[in-house]
Amino acid sequence: MAEGSFISDFKKLIKLRLTFLVVFSASVSFLIGCKEQDNYNWFNWLILTIGGFLVTGAANGFNEIIEKDLDKLMTRTSDRPIPAGRMTTGQALVLSLFMGIAGTLILVRLNFLTGVLSVFSILLYAFLYTPSKRKSPIAVFIGAFPGALPPLIGYFAAFDNPQISWIPIILFLIQFVWQFPHFWAIAWVLDDDYKRAGFRLLPTTQRDKISAAMTFFSTLVLIPVSLLPTIMGFGGYVIGAVSLVAGLIFSWFAFNLYRKLDIASAQKVMFGSFFYLPLVQLVLLFDFIP
Image 1 (cartoon, rainbow, N blue to C red):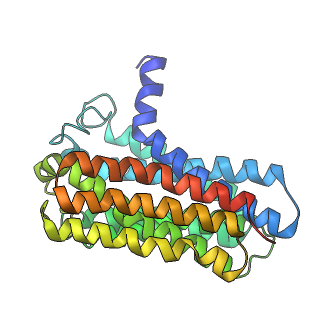
Image 2: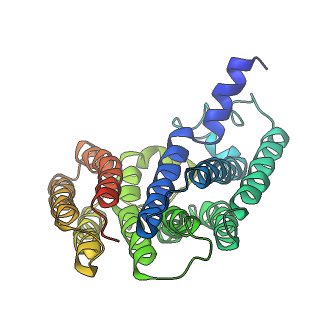
Image 3: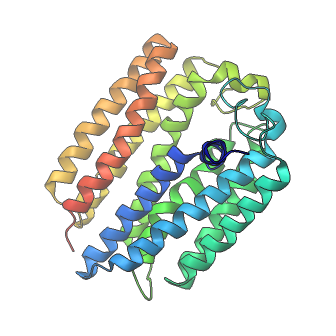
């Protein structure tokens, strides 16, 4: 395998863009934890970034190994390295195991809880969420847990002896609720492709009024949840205003999906979700009140 080809296939195996989004979320939460202590440890930030990248890449690799036969059936995934025959299952397994073990060992250097949560996220995503995607739409609810762990992991990584408080719980909740309109919008856009693999991710398994209504409702729930930092006093008025405006725009996109029931509206919800989360997390970092 040529070097360029291997790098390209490795990016697809670990779902590079998704991995970057996860690492970004954890990194911002880490910096929030640092700001709370007024102590920025950039070496630990680097450890978190590298360890988080490896652990997330491992989870995505295991996901592709498990779904290799299903990926062949979908246009979106048929060119991934395993279904396309450019990488064997064994090669992918070795890479994923190495990344998972190395990433966990790196994160344990920060503190034990960070390492444990990282392993938990791999197990939940690869071995509970992945097989549930063909069973029931409840898979989105299951997947929201490992999907919301990065800010929790990042925040706890900033402390020598992490303690449970409202801050990490609310960081987790914002990302947890965000996942529902995010995944349902993706499921709406890709429903035809998903059906080829038997994935059942829309609330009713159909592009119908109820699925659109639940997507819209989830964006409405996100608004008060995203205002919790301001309500609880660790976020200023800037993050409150940005969360409110971004939440209303996001909900408007989802309302249009409810009205029109078309793929174009679902795409706006999907792309809106990509902008919403990094925006809210970044503004919270700069408007955080220790």
